[in-house]
Length: 96
Image (cartoon, rainbow, N blue to C red; front, side, top):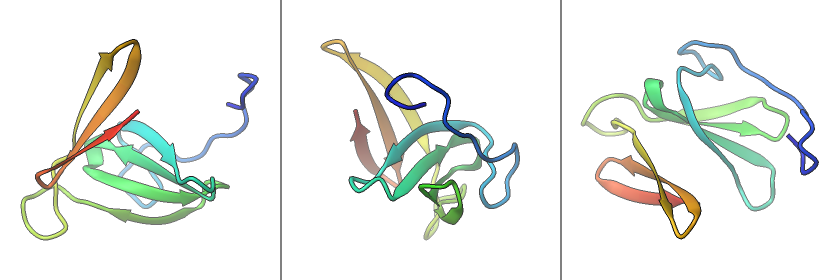
């Protein structure tokens, strides 16, 4: 949606393949707006897309070894702001 609340575009389908989602949990863009990152909770990964929705790469898979993780998300409110916590391989990241 744009700043006026109008629908702009959509992409992807349900699944486990590149660019597909099974439980997208949150979305973010880099400061330039060139790249979009989607937390795909049920597939235990983060996927990266260009601004047109073209799949670029993914990282994460279920496990405890190298390049594996269990993504755990927790939304909470603090002073009327909604935050999402993302736990990856023992690290904690906050997104507002």
